[in-house]
Length: 432
Image 1 (cartoon, helix red, strand yellow):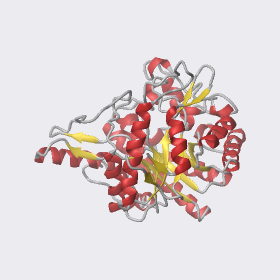
Image 2 (tube, one colour; image 1 turned 30 degrees about the vertical axis):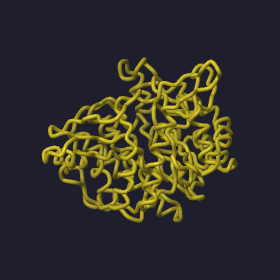
Image 3 (cartoon, one colour; image 1 turned 60 degrees about the vertical axis):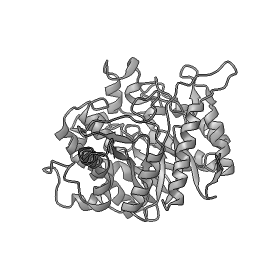
Image 4 (cartoon, rainbow, N blue to C red; image 1 turned 90 degrees about the vertical axis):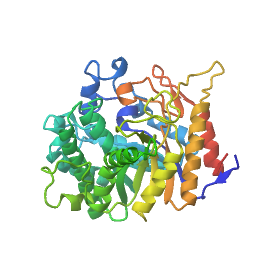
């Protein structure tokens, strides 16, 4: 392929989340999260895996920062474990937890790497879940208080509020395959509204207390296409799009819900939609897979899938979703906050990890992103998912998304071929 060049100020990074990589779930005053509880329940997570050891980043963050520096990363997107900072989700902060994140940020800045902080990546304090979790409106206000603690503690420009509210809603409350394990569509809509309310409240706090910083949600967007040319498939795809994308984009940007997707309104109070549509300074876009929908509202898989059976390899979907956001919500800076692939990679006899499938996937998707940028999409940066192999939620440690291999017994890190390929891309700015 002909090399394509990215702007010199384009920012290249990698992403992780606290519960997936930190480990140390019982150390230094950290409280219990819903994922600790969910993973401890037999049958919820493959092989009975839990958040320990993760990638043990809590103890190895300095080593990981040096690894990031060697790979040339310019940004590191990580999340804060809410129960590490507020063990019960309320009250005064746990200073040992805060100190960890201060040291992490200081280390990143010292290495010339920009921190990008996600406030909530699914690990709700169990004490708040015991009081109703995201079905309880008060959780949104507790989240805003927690956000204020973090804003004041960390000198960071770019913040993300809620990571993938759709995954919490669909996997945590519709199908129950994620924490807290609820299977109820009506309850899912209540949780959806309160997650978005939490996003708006936390955004207001940052704007009020720290003008000049930026904040926005991290939304996993699934471009939705009809599986054939029939009117029925087109209508089914339109309805699916309302539930997959418009349910989150429209309230955040327009202050309204799509009627097809939000069928419950009793939890919406006066002023809520104005709060939810607080100005978005930067939008995190997470893309993994498209959805092709037939006339019966069923998904039809059209392109290759690998280890993660839900992930259909279709780079054009990233191009399309970036141009859609640019068209519908012009002027908002976009950062790709997650994009990646799980593969069956292992350490070879030569000591390397040769993940050609991942390189092909990344090359295709980064190329599609470049085409979108050339067509006018305001994309500032890209974060590969993930920096490290880690705990992959209900799949435990059975799926490896990292560009760096982790031996969970020894915690040895080995940069995979994809990491070396990504390093060269960052150094030259050229996609080959």
